[in-house]
Length: 409
Image (cartoon, rainbow, N blue to C red):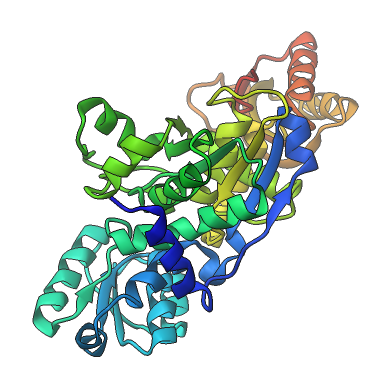
């Protein structure tokens, strides 16, 4: 099991590659939660993710013969870019196997950091299988994304930065995928102060740690489904699991809707872009997934900022819907002149903004003398949505919410 000395050694190895990222006190999120919230902005790291830390430490612990033979890995995202840059900075040849379905932006970024990219298979598992084949055929060293002590120790340098910048830390909140980051961070902060609480966060669609802790050994799930692709791992690591069991105090989960809301709030209030995995610690804090005291000093580790722009568009829209700032409703009108105008007058009176209208007379489920109308509306929050719906119903319209805010708590 890794120890503090391993993380301290890693800090020396990665110092010229990995940035010491900011730890920023947030007035906004402190007011929202009642805690003293400091955001660890690892989204500003080189390659946009913490992965450069562990990759650099692993590459720089290679023997001379291993360095000459080069490294290989499989990844569709952050780890690919981390290994590419780490190898390039150390003069080591790197091959990265990526699924054929990997986003072109991530393929280009990995190439730009100096790695040879091999596209193989339709998913990560197929890419990983091929990477191990190249490992055997070409004598390369496989750099695992998380289940490696050098990688874990490298990721732990993030924890050293937190305790150096904020010695009075009470709680650190860290995403969990395979467990490499939280293993390293927990090792660093617990060595600083055993009473510091370490809370791990998984996405509901990729939650493996809770069942693994319950059964006492790593458990796998058949599939993962979450917008937090950086932690969409089907099985926690064999080497990371004992560290999590010993040094992580609590593990909680967040839904994709909760992640989307946190991501959008970081954009709008924090003026900072984080990816889905990076938003999970903030989501857990905002949604009250763990108990904390007033003025407790809490650090959510926002571990990455790489997000596909198409996904970002979807996430923003989901976040707006969940916050009651965008709603889609359907109603049926009498097919007569002025009926639609009557409805729109209500919307205007209630100060909702019309984003789109769909008017359909052909739906077989409505009367021949009726027309179905769907409205996409920009609103100001759940209370505004409720007031608008009540007014529409009071005026005699039956209205169905197709997409609206989730219940507030």
